[in-house]
Length: 139
Image (cartoon, rainbow, N blue to C red; front, side):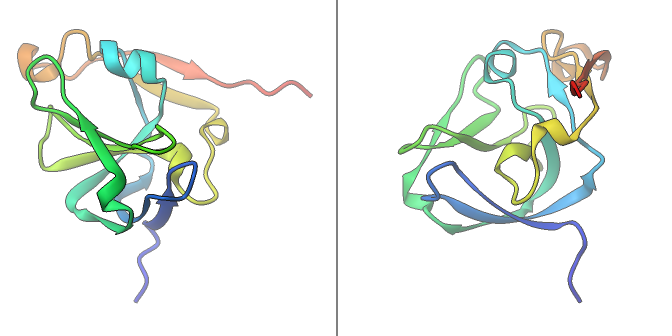
């Protein structure tokens, strides 16, 4: 039986291809205010660590860690696109870049919750929403 939350995806150049079972479909979409996410600008959705399978290109994936080194951010070494990251707040979870999912665009979301990554929940003990990012198309 196919799972409605199972999605295919890839980086920009197609060297990295993956399949992922999203924990709550696209309902977990969010942005973060930490220094890295702020610069990256991606909308991420959630998946369990065991729910993401690299189908092609594992050898071209590169990772980046900063600050505590807990979170691991993966990107294609050829095109540079961030595909997913293992979360600091929950190491048993991945954040997956919605722009890499087949048939999904960050502009499909009229509103995206923005979470406080500056005061990280692992440090503060509090998960805090600090705003909403809105996309309002012009006719």
